[in-house]
Image 1 (spheres, rainbow, N blue to C red):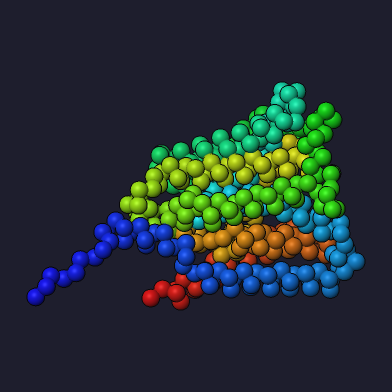
Image 2: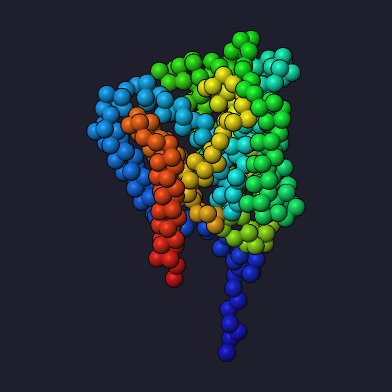
Amino acid sequence: MSEPTKSAHPPAEKAVATGLSMRGLGTGFMEMRHLGLLGALALLVVVGLITRPENFATASNFVSILSLAATIGVITVGATFVIIGGGIDLSVGAIMALASVWATTLATQSYGPVVMVICAILVGTGAGLVNGLLIAYGRLVPFIATLAMLVAARGLAQRMSDRKTQLIQTDNSAIVNLSTTRVLGIPLLVYIFALVVVLGWIVLNRTTFGRRTYAVGGNPEAARLAGIDVRRHTMLLYALSGLCCGIAAILIMARTTTGSSTHGDLYELDAIAAVIIGGTLLTGGRGTIMGSILGLLIFTLITNLFILNGLNTSDQLIAKGLIIVVAVLLQRRNLKERSP
């Protein structure tokens, strides 16, 4: 009798295939989920047209929705990478606040708007890098590490600003112009948001970095066997999230003409919730940029409708909390249905 045919692939390669295949799993489900999110957006638009047609269906309200979505949206792109990679980042709002305060100190502003922009990006990326180092090499749980950064970054922002709002000086109006200058009726900051989304989509879907992100989130051991430096990649994911926070700090400075330690309060809630609603698994390994952006637009529309209808902010938070719970429960049910 002939010997049994040996597998053409060693165990390591099988593990690699298992990890990398997570990116392809659930494609049909994700497409269906996107259609469901588009349906939810359409339903919210109908609600707005029925309840406040004179205020909702206006160009100024449309621009307001996009401007609000832009700042949180840039953070959401970074959060999508982190969560697909199997992590979580609770510090995004605080890092954005710290970057905005650092960039608007009198010392920084004296060097002009270019240095202010560079400062915000470096501070955001640096804080994210600290998160990554603590998690990847310090072996801290992501929840604990980013929670500590949330507290520390917010405290440092308060210390630097002495709990005062820092105004952007008239000499640095180039930053404010990002919000006031419009192309085809849309502020420049919305175009910056769109550029970040496009670049995020390309990196996640068309580069080795994106494939490694799915592999690390889907099966870290398989990724390690594939030769991926899981710790270094994890560190880079948090640095990327911090970079997005730095860019978001520039956008919120443009919108408010200030840097403040109160910027970004509860932005981590909106960003993470948008990612979850968009279909990204909290356990990692599956998700899309477009799903996260659709989830963000749903949250932004809900906020807009509450404001237009004069509803209480606390009711808005309750509604968002319920949406998050429903989204997670639907995720769990779909996972059970798909499991063999």
